[in-house]
Image (cartoon, rainbow, N blue to C red; front, side):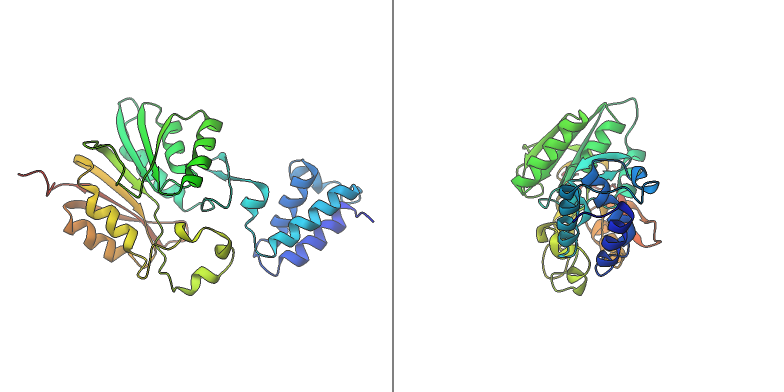
Length: 287
């Protein structure tokens, strides 16, 4: 037996509310996906009957949402910086907070001049691709240690017609010898391995490698900052996303490794989320 759109939406909302604070939106997105229609289609048609196959598919997706499975994985897509990207369990679901990192990076990249940028731990490729689309003259390189992430990132790059040089690498390790950049950006894993936050919401369904780097949560940030000077031009910039409670530690790391003009910017929730710094002293330059 099938259902009407309005009844199906209420059914889905009531169940999804057990795992999501946006249950109504989730239900609408899933039903619109099953109908292969935009969300606006369902608003004025509460009495329209769903086909049996559509109702069955919708019930299955709602059940998966309860596992929980992130909406982005169920739909196979996620919007970031007003662009749509493919999303799979291979990579972290893109977050709106990461748009802040993109904004800071764009401030440092000239519009009408060439520039070299490296995105460390690219995941689904959203940062690298967005920067390339916004600054076409920029040469963008992107690394990730997970080959499945690179498959997804390459697919997203093709989807958006963005020419990116993808490199399978554990942070800097496989970058070509002697390669230097004007800007390095990264949204690395930064949650401590035993933090209870990892058991909340949709996080258990996302790749652990993209969420936690180890015991302290600082391991990846320490690697990125401590080796950045080997891959930056003098006066180059490093921009990293980090935990809201890691601002002071990240600033100390940056100072210890030759960075100055350190600035931390708060996210849309008012939390210190992204730090930018300029390489003012290249400790490996021999000067």
